[in-house]
Image 1: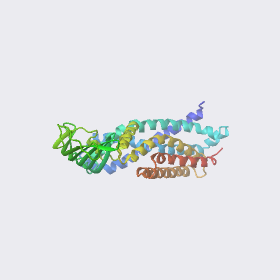
Image 2: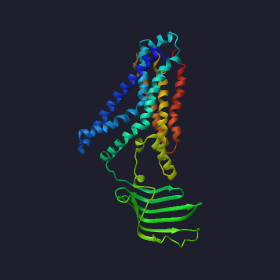
Image 3: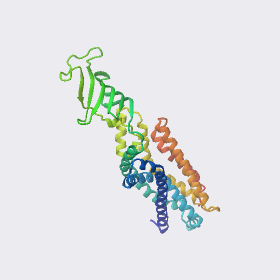
Image 4: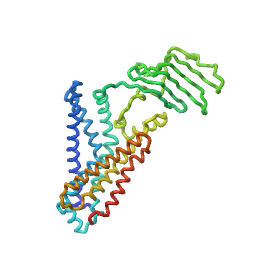
Length: 366
């Protein structure tokens, strides 16, 4: 049963949380605007375009700092209550420290639920527009070239392109190989492969095709329409130029469902860099639990009355926040380079800080 004290604590935490989010987002936005004002001016962007960009930028930043903001809010609220001897009064009335944690976890559950939904499905939609905006106006060039592309596009069908340029949507030294029972049965190769935007098909230039019955015998009954080689041929493949894009931080624009689909596609094709998307997906599931861990630690850190006032406890809260962010950044970097499993990278900081919190719990006031 929820008491007046419970409602009081929940209200204080939620109001402080949204206030801190507002302050931090405002500061970050002003700093970001200061850094990008020259780019806005250089691209002759009007106030409407700039406001539209920050309408997408602000939710992303708010979602990104949510766990740390919760921690800071809990430390601030609890340290203020401890300084005014409210914590002592609550515990003296017969309420146990475990029972005192209940309203904190209720507030944490509300924030975690909202954060999980927004970061999982809502914010990625606005991030798509933000990423397009940044690619259009902030990047020095939208041009890129990829080399040595290997991927599986269908079961037992493998594609290789020596290099691909997005300016001309052209690939060089193309080959497509089909296997049956680990044996090559069909090989299509071309000097160039170019995307036809009007037909939404690929055009093979100076192509050759070989169909094989065995390792030593080439089929003689080639398709009469296409022959064994030619200058140009239109074909439909299960790929498009979008599959070769340089998708820097593109995971920010994907919902959890889209991340799962993209990861499955990359695994099927044997593409490199899948770890980046796997880490992002795991972090989105781990973030709600992170909020609970930081709420628990925040209460323990700040529930004891300090002779020096609340300043030390708030400073300690910021210090622990910095350590946590550093830890998360390190594990994510190791996972993205393949040195650490994505699921471990996402959940290891939570596990370590849970153990630290339980160790600190024995020093909490009773």
